[in-house]
Length: 276
Image (cartoon, rainbow, N blue to C red; front, side):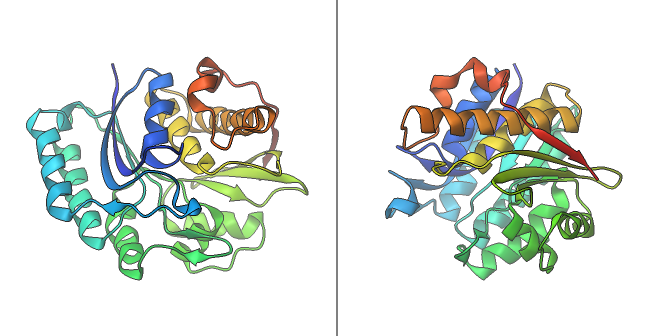
């Protein structure tokens, strides 16, 4: 069974962060190992006050995973939220050891969870700098939202062409969430050195938090399964649209990831695909 290591948040009652990604990966029959960077009972958007994992404990948890010889078995690594620059430094060291230990190169996806519109940066500047300087260089793919892409690249992004240029300036293949699309649409933008494709779907009024986390995990699952990046991104976009629509239909305050089950693996939501 494929193995994925997630370095991100654990939120007990909300389908966001690493805890949500565990369920997405499990639906794809990928065994998840979550090493939490922070623990909360519910979403911070609802006023939760959790506890960041102390760096010493974070390092020890990773050392325990490594001691079980799992670093050499990892097929996928997803990094997400970090609470301190010290955690980022520890994560970067773990990534280097995983790359050295693995018999086959694992796929490393860095989701640079730094901020969003309209609030802007919601981690410390030190965390943002550490993610940019230490984790982005180790990534095979990055999955920033549009605001994070602008922050990392230093660009002001107003349209798809600017987003493509910003992603290429970072020098890493990217799947950008909340990408510019048509009226009443939201989209994913897949960008590498040679290709840029927009995958757009209708924007719904009441989308629960966590769609970016779902997209990252779904995309990573596709890459582990051997899908081409475009096929993995297309499935992730359809899955996100399908889950949000189900949340609205069922009046769910959270993404119904577990309830959808197989529909996550074989989503059928419509997309508009535009190649640049």
